[in-house]
Image (cartoon, rainbow, N blue to C red; front, top):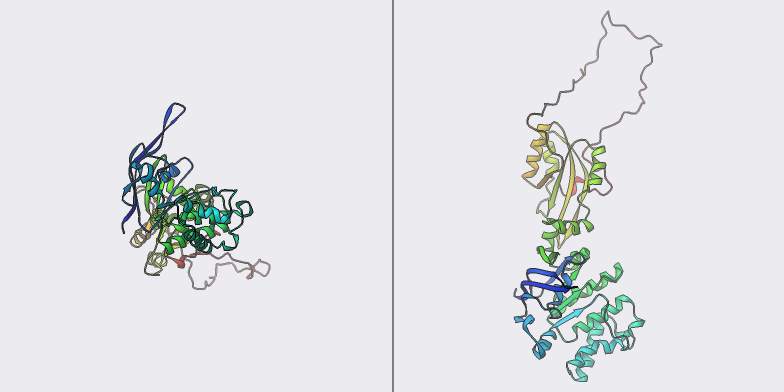
Length: 404
């Protein structure tokens, strides 16, 4: 796969009230041709500024931006205009011409490119059918819903048959259902037209649903990047972890851990579940081999890009030495993080064995008093609490056998 966009040591500094503000700092990033690449970050992270360097709406203070083999950051005049025709852009607020019909909005970039009227008609009709708005050709933007407006924006961005589509928070103003419809449309744009898509968003769910790879930005820098699966299943930075935890609730917060510890007094560990080719119940096996009990007290497992990942918080119950051995056994199969530390070598005291009562019926000897008829006898029907083992006690928990 060849490269569509390259950011080489890109920095951008603005002058704000006489002071220098670094919006981008030494960004190195590549977007491969034909992929959907997402950039996620909180407000002020620099993601929109970076996106706007792709079509030279912003020019880097230092560094280079290369698009389809051309250093677009160095182009001017007609050369820049020609390069921009290969790059479509969709916006958060649609940016439609309110005084023009849907047809004329889509046709506008073609008229600027001096495309013949017959070709414009064919292309606009094709795009109206593609975005599902053939019946809205003569409508005005004020007569459309937000989702329909964004469909017009996508059709307009595709009018000149671009090789690259850049999207700046294109779904932020839409409701969840409409967002899903727009994301499906963008997926079709990528699959059917082969268009490379670079999108920026603060909605991590959009990245999860649409992107192949993702970069996480903070303070003008790329702090983490990789496949969406890699970043979601094993985020390395605090920023990435915050984003992922906002949509995936696999790992308990400190508040939830406090509630768990109030009920569960065994050793707590986290098992990080990764996509595996086997459904072998390793948690049950390790618990059985080491003669301990367990409860799954929190966690979940998700699917992403056809692969499974997640985290289970497990309580291990038993003598310290057996729990330690069980954790070692789990680590042979899964990634294990200890939530509660084990005992220190000098403080470990072997658990005292509970005396086991003799199962044989006792026979009173001559000195044993025999109860008379007035001695109260325990009610045989009194309920006796039963231990509950190997189960989940939190409403968001998956059963152990699902992926353990």
